[in-house]
Amino acid sequence: MPFVAAEGGHQLMRDQLEALLVAARRPDVTVRVLPYSAGEHAGLEGAFTVLSFSEEVDPDIAYVEGTAGDVYVESSDHIDRYKMAFTSICDAALSPEDSMKLIADIKERPIHD
Image 1: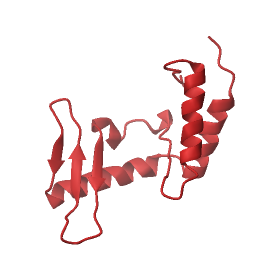
Image 2: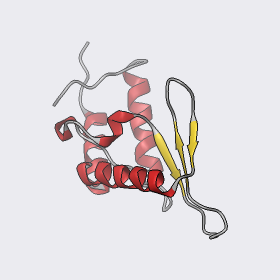
Image 3: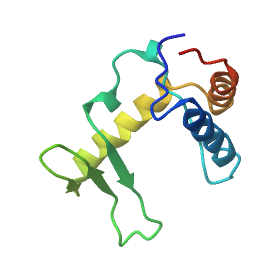
Image 4: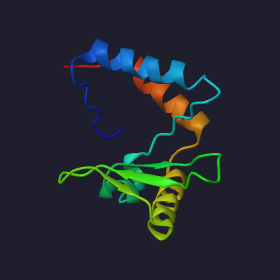
C-alpha cells in the first residue's frame, strides 16, 4: 500500500475515515477513491465543481478554484470539458463499494509511528 498520511494524528485520521463511511450510507452521497495506481488524471489540473440545475432557464455553471482566484465558467463548450474531466476521473476511480472496502480496511490497519 502506498504511503497514507495520518495528518493531525492517527485517531483523527480514523475518525475522518469513519465519517466518510457514515456519509457514504446516505442516498445522496457517493464516495469514490481515486487510487495512486490511477496515475495522472484530469483532477490534477485543479479543483472544480459543475453545478447543474433542474430548471432549463438556469444554465450549468462550472466553479473552478485556482491560485489566481476562483472563476465561474458559463461557456457550454468549457463546461462540457469539465463534465468530460469528471467522467474521466470517475472512470479511473474505484467503484463506490470497493472504495468503502478500502476505506474500512485502512481505518482498521494498525498504524505504527
